[in-house]
Amino acid sequence: MDKMQGRYKNRSGLAAFAAALLIGLLLLAGVFGGAKTVQAATSKGIYLSKTSIAMTPATTKRLKLNGATAKKVKWSSSNEKVAAVSASGTVTARKKGSAKITAKYKKKRYTCAVKVSYGTVTQEDGIRYKDISGSFGRTGRWFKRNISGGNYYFTNTEGSAVYFKVSGSKYVNIEFVSQVTVAVPYFAYSVDGGSMKRQMISDGRISVGDTKTHYVRLLIDSISEYEDRWGAESGVGIKTVRPVTGSGAVAAVKPLNAVIAFYGDSITQGVRTMSYELSPSGTSATHSYAWYCARQLDLIPYFAGYGGSGIAQPGCFNNCINAINSYSLYRRADNYDADVIVIEHGTNDVYTFGDVFVNGYKQVIEQLHKKHPKAYIMAMIPFTQLHADEIRSAAAGYKWCTVVETGSWRLAYMDGLHPNAKGSKTAGKYLAKKVASKRKVSLH
Image 1 (cartoon, rainbow, N blue to C red):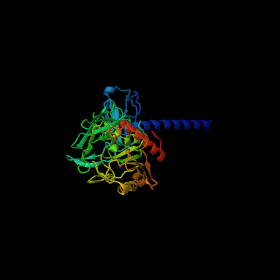
Image 2 (cartoon, rainbow, N blue to C red; image 1 turned 180 degrees about the vertical axis):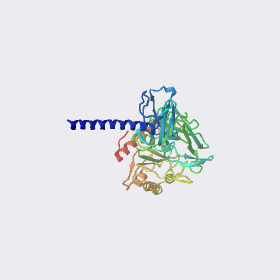
Image 3 (cartoon, rainbow, N blue to C red; image 1 turned 135 degrees about the vertical axis):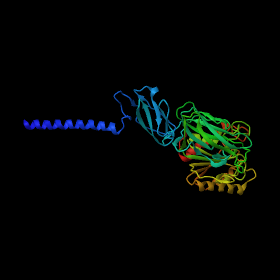
């Protein structure tokens, strides 16, 4: 009996010691952790809705200090460049990094750790985006150019695109810089993979609808065919992309989809798809056969279409081989990855025939294959059927190249030469089917 009582006393003593130790640890946590910083519920039931959150740039999340009078809570961020917080507790992620959000209430502080990292998302149009650093991502023929003392991304080619997402602002201001002498260019944009809207670069404000997170895809849609793109590098640059509200955030994204490249003339450029006018108002890259083809395949179009150009003819830029190798007279073209390459040339080569044209076309095919050895090359017969036999001859013998016959296509034209928007959509549909059959990809 005495032994059992002894065991019982020992156990009781251990329990009492454990309880005392636990109380001591809790008291020490209050001393060394700072009595003014509270992470969990207090005796009065005041606590943050979240003590840690993960976010991607240009997104928002709402924090709430439960049990507190909302108007008396003061919010702050340890690093507003990474994550800012509004007076009501809405956290806006700005760029990759870490920050601590603090809610101060009645001399006590409640904290939430915020980690901003990169992610991916797929939009309605099938384009998959990845977060990257900066205010916008790019595809197409962009290069840095100094204008009025600033060094900006600049392009002399329709279809060159930028991508970003915005949060906390219904509007975004795009500040364009241009070097043109003939007419004001147009741009086009879509929000969250929706339909494209066009407006002149003189009006750079775009609407995204509300203050939620939205993805924007923006293209330089038309530059006058009469601008000197080769020697003078006429074109459009982007100086800034900014939300209209100070609490908003803009972050860069980059498409992860494969690229389909188009080397062609005014038909690839989108001339006269909108109207008979040979001006930016009548031209639209987003109404060209190239755009419609890429859209059906969920591919990113790379445009190198220049009015009047050909295998030999220079047109408003230069001939095809120079378009492959150079952005202008002064700049070499950057390398990029392409899954498919389409050649739409021959219509303007009215003074070049026979072996001269065939050899020139072969030079183009071989140069494209050298730069893009994994890409499949599609040699389109011009809609006029000019040089059809010579193109078939030039493409023969290359296992990674196929001829796209267009003689049976029934297209609607604006002037008998340039397809209008309806005709371009039809041509894009036919071409997409041909590409899909060769690359074994599905249509959107």
